[in-house]
Image 1 (spheres, one colour):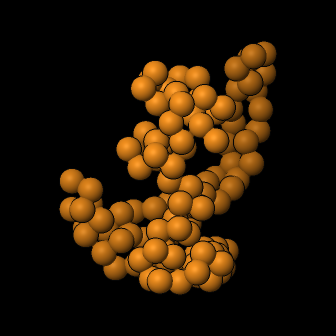
Image 2 (cartoon, helix red, strand yellow; image 1 turned 90 degrees about the vertical axis):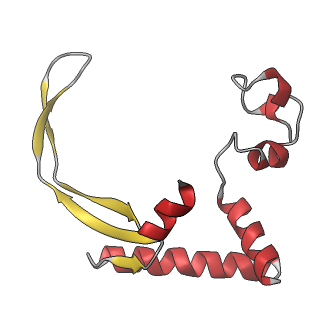
Image 3 (cartoon, one colour; image 1 turned 135 degrees about the vertical axis):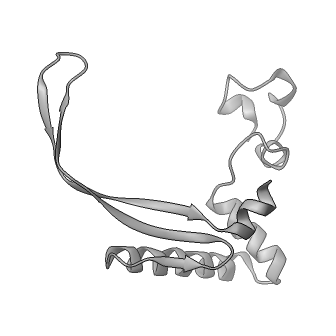
Length: 119
């Protein structure tokens, strides 16, 4: 698949290039399949086994956050939940006041090592 099939707003130099090449050049975000491929390559696991590992990590993070507990990955960052109170808002189309229900959001705070690596 080429960029022409997905994104009309890409620079002309990217239009007929394969999506994998465009991702490598930093134009598109890395998706789950890219992450699985990187794990497989770095660990000498098959892609199927790497997919199981990635799914297990995501599942463990999800289960912990469901219990309203933090996930601290030293050097990488911290995932935590935060409670949002119910509030009032306005429908932008009609101006009518609406009630926004309380909810739980997920926050990520990057660790020092990750920040240093990116900067």
